[in-house]
Image (cartoon, rainbow, N blue to C red; front, side):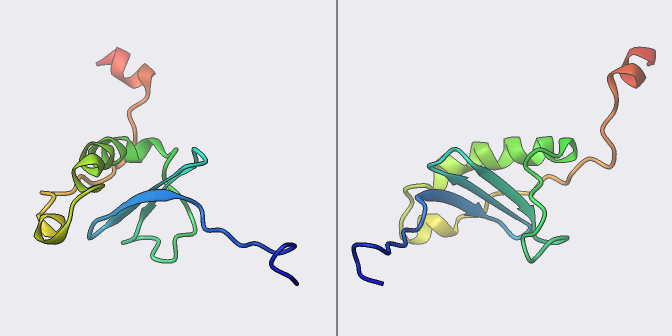
Length: 97
């Protein structure tokens, strides 16, 4: 193929990788969240999984701190990572309590 007929371009994205999680936001609007402890091959994104709601919030809050960091600042500890909730509480169960 010639350069005119074949162009491969990587998508623009920002990502944050912790010891356990990988969060990637693409310029296309797609978002992926992987629990690397349970899915090291990044097969099953947890972005829409309710059990990972607190993880999503935590990673999204930390991401702006690291988007433009350079050098030693990029190696600062994020603090303790949240864990996914064991089982999300249904609205019905919360209403009964």
